[in-house]
Image (cartoon, rainbow, N blue to C red; front, side, top):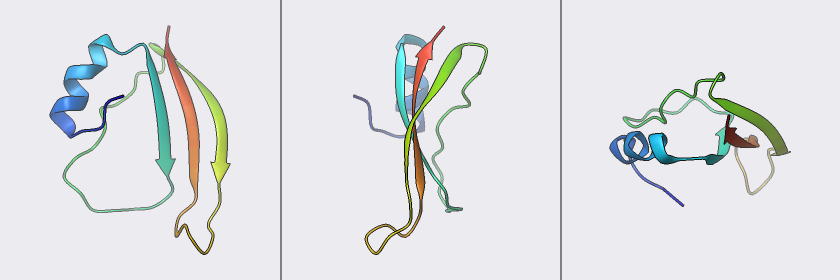
Length: 68
């Protein structure tokens, strides 16, 4: 499991074989982003969604990506 900043993500990408990705449906300001994911190198399978609620201000989508 890797949780970190841009440099950590960039170092981990060449050795990663699977990514569990959460896409939060919001526009936020920040200085760290996940590296671009090349769809030719990764297959993407949806796992589900979480809608807005009293506990979650934003909805989100969950995916698993496997290296091809």
